[in-house]
Length: 258
Image 1 (cartoon, one colour):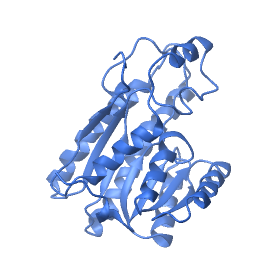
Image 2 (tube, rainbow, N blue to C red):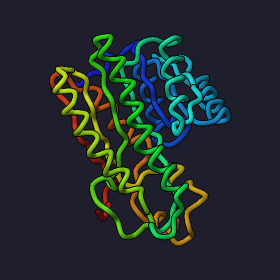
Image 3 (cartoon, rainbow, N blue to C red):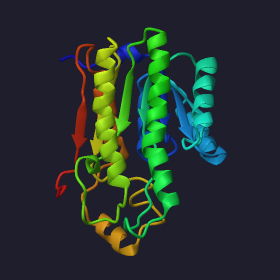
């Protein structure tokens, strides 16, 4: 199997959660490979961070643009797609990296927390997918949609107080197969890939300000992936030839207990 990113050179990608962690690493990796990347995030300050990083990427094959979009608001997502289409061109790749988690036991969490988790991890992903597929099919684009899932989308841990986070990631696992089946039924060659990392350095793990000290100590002592490791996995899935689809790619750090 010959792996190559050449087919994506000069094409447009949207990456959510592009300010830090996996989203930032994925956006930067795509720019390195010659794509025009719209990095979405929820606030002006975070978008400014993306645009500042774009200056550091000058001279690379591609370009990075920050775009403000609160993924819990459908109108923001639709406006972001319109801006990308009007200013950058037709979307060929969407990588859904944005996620939300707030530590709490299921029976101690709040309804607001549940709704934000579901809105960010599931509903936003569905809206992003719907809009991307509509535009790809309308323009005969054999694009690629990537979901940053989690190993917690395949089992429920007992160590952390994850409340509904694992449930939302299990939904992503199911949605990946639902999307694949729908694309087959429609005769489309758009690909969909779920990437499920183990524990990874991010604002939801070791950089989180909301974790309890007990959880922070537990996380600190575990094997952990770098965000760049996950970005490399995304690039691998995107690099496959036309007839190959990586449906599920699970990545764990050496020594991962699960």
